[in-house]
Length: 426
Image (cartoon, rainbow, N blue to C red; front, side, top):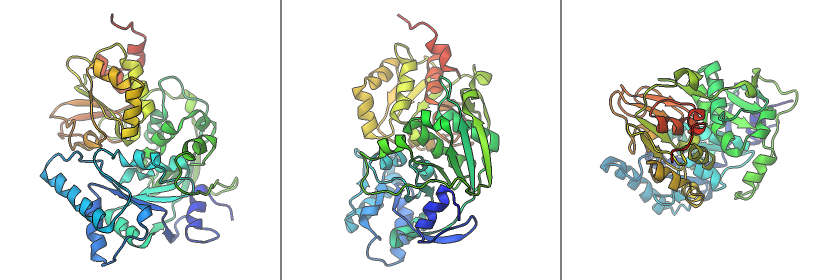
């Protein structure tokens, strides 16, 4: 029978001819990972099982990315639990400080996930990897412990809604704006436990960096996974990084979807999500002028090289406003090095920005940029819930990197055109 790409991947991992939405399955996993927050809980549950070794040491990774470098004794203890476990089990894929980056970007960059995989992680933004044509989803630490032990995981097969993206994005409109626009239309629970399948000719005009931004935020609509069929762009990015063979799946032309929605990508404006929900989406021009205390460019959503290039285009030859702080955090050491070689880091420093080693810190209000009472931040991150980046009386606006950079220059929410069209100070 006809199936969607998500259903085909799951069927292959239970050795079945077909699976259907709502069916409970026990499927093989191709790769699992946890971070410095979720790994200790998974390790604790794993040890209760009294199993001598993980199901396959080559298919398990631990990545330190949230509270690193350790911000306090508690976070240092968390890291020590994981380090001790990795050493005791001689696990090869361990990314500690200096080698580590934000897991969702790093693990794709390192070639651990590819088309056709079932990829699970103890972090909600694991759906990021759906841009490669994988079924990728976040799970709790106890579920991850079971997957580490057995190489299997139970799942309910999700219904799929297909989003057909038409046309080509306008200047300063990015993959981040596209997914925010979709979330603004359907709401933060509009895809609850569903598969968001992205298709249409607009994808052909999007790089992998932009595609990752789209699938990364599927969870902000409540989705189980976001996914795109692999194409030439996917394969050109993936093949030089691949560590193992992959399987290509595509949805059948007559696959059964819960819904099919057309999105005119060419009509979209540059947008922001206003406090305090990713679903509160408005054109940036409607809220331009809001005073901003901090701008943050980074995270698994928008800490990639193209995001840094966009920010540098806005910041080149300009200064961060005297009453605004700018934080720039490349998502991985490789991206940091590339930004350094391209002169982007120099631009950020000359503008008055602060650059950090790769960490999720500010995104979760953990460290490296926590907000005080009443402060406003424009962030390229994925969430702006109350208290997400610090004090409960702080406010976060979600944007693309160009908007964050322009807002840093003007000290208020701004469209990049306001800065780039202005003459560069001599």
